[in-house]
Structure formats: C-alpha cells, structure tokens
Length: 158
Image (tube, rainbow, N blue to C red; front, top):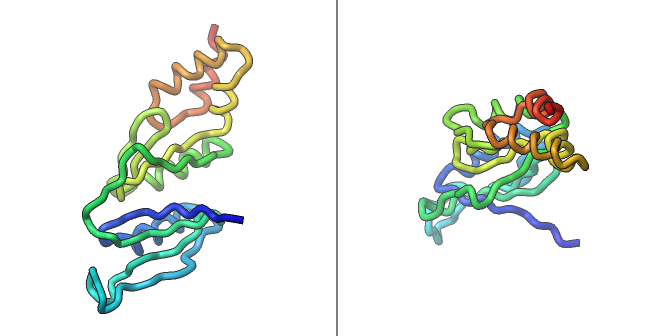
C-alpha cells in the first residue's frame, strides 16, 4: 500500500517545528533526522530532513531554504471530539506568534495553516433541516475559533 507523506518546507526550522508539532499532538514522535553533507547545498551537518509522525501520520520537515513559504492554499484539518479538544489545539497552535483566522482556521508560528474542526460543527452543517444547517453556517462564518455551544444555539434558534 502506498503511503502519502506531506513534506513541509522550512528555511532552517525543520527540527524546531517537528519538535513543536510532536508536543502538540498525542501519539507523536520523531522517527529519523538526516543532515546535509559536504556536497551541500547548505552547510555540512545542518539538519536536512526530520521524519516524524503526528498521531501515527507520517510527515517530513525539510530545511530547503528561504525560497518557499506556506500559504492558506494548503491546510491540515484537525477532527476534534469536543470543545475542550478544540480549545487545546487552538491555544497550542496559536501560541508564540500563531495567528487566528476565520471559521476555525489559524496559522501556527511557522505560517502553516490548520483547521480546528469540532465534529459537532460538521454534524450541524449536514443537518437534514436546511434552516438549522444554514443558521449553524451563519454562526460559524462570524467566528474565529469555533465555539460549539454558540453554533448549537444558533442552529436551534427560530
């Protein structure tokens, strides 16, 4: 079976970022670190790649240089069981320079985009009553971090 592994391009922060991400997600670990050699193009012994797992999902962090930056065109979605989990991920990923965006989206301190999504929001947006679903959508559109109780209250309003 083929494994898909996202490769995250950093300038020089691959090791730092991987350590940060494994501190945020449970069941996560560094699996390998490689270094540049004498052939370059970066200084010998500088970290080249960090292989890591986030809750069992493989990732690679690459110190490729300053040429490329993350954009909102790619994000990672976090399926959260409840508000406490939303709050925990939101606080951890916006800490130390992360930025809140709209509708449950944020950028971490490295500029990588995340969607912090409570399962209950997904349920409400798919509600068979189109009025409830639309009220939930309208509530979500006005939020930064998703507050489940507020989305539920909006969905239930008549």
